[in-house]
Image (cartoon, rainbow, N blue to C red; front, side, top):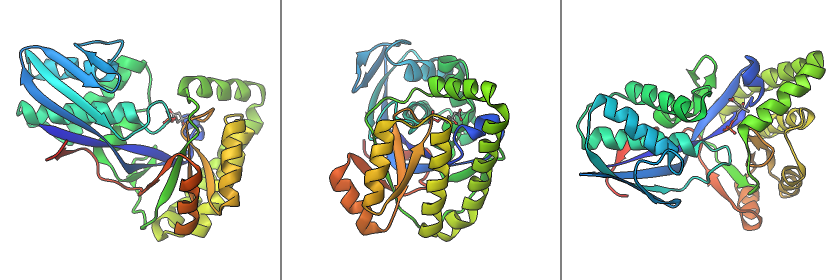
Amino acid sequence: MIASAPAKVILFGEHAVVYGRHAIVSAINLRCYVKVERSNEIRIKSPIGITGLDFEVHPYVSYAIKRFREIKPINGVNVEIRSEIPVASGLGSSSAVTVAVLKALDGEFETGLSDEEIFEIARKVELDVQGIGSGTDPFIATFGGTWIVPERKAVKIGKIRLIVVNTKEKSVTAEMVKKVAELRKKYRNIVDGIFDVIDAITLNSVDALEKGDIKTISELFFFNQCMLKAIGVSNRKIEETIEKLRELGVSAKITGAGGGGCVVGIGDEGSMLSALKEFSGFLVEPGAEGVRFEDKF
Ligand code: PMV
């Protein structure tokens, strides 16, 4: 049985969302594919390597199998992973693999799990591995689409394309969240003020996203990036990338925790295509479909 689940980008509101403000998160058409077959032993094959149940090397897949076994006590399974999603870059690769593994297991072993149930198990796996987590990544990987959080209300996004550029520097979410918390301890009123501005930017973006209004989205990306820079989660590589993208006519911001990872940008099609010649990245469509079975691996 084969299943796939999508990557995600945070379009607006990262970090502020940790302090109760809004964020907009969207599934994109980069996917993680998982093939499972019944077997007498557990074997996990991915670009990282081949292991058995291994909570160090393949933590998300191993915990997904462990949690699935609580529902159906299977002896073994062959799991193979192929992913288009760069890892540790804020695009939700861990949740995509978790959700795709659960869906493929569900199909292979005929457990008839609903997407809601798959999400609940994936949420447990996120906590098994990370100890904490907002649950947003497994939610998006399962249901796809574009959502405003914390309400989890769907946003009907217009037909737009975005560019995602990988700075190739690692983004460590826990480190960045801690850095922001420390800044907020010292400058509580200033940082909370910045979060309020980010909240306003996010709320303003809903209409622009629904209309596919590239100009307004560009302006709001710029505002949001200035605020992310102000709270210290940008760095030189990110700023240089964003500056070069701007010269090419693409407005971009960090997506996710920052300190590395990816930036997301928007511009007219020609500008984005010329940006792709200079950067390692992808043109993506927001609002991609959630977890699903596949015919091909
Ligand atoms: O880089 P990611 O995908 O882990 O996103 C982190 C988003 C934060 O707002 C910084 C943290 C969070 O849990 O929402």
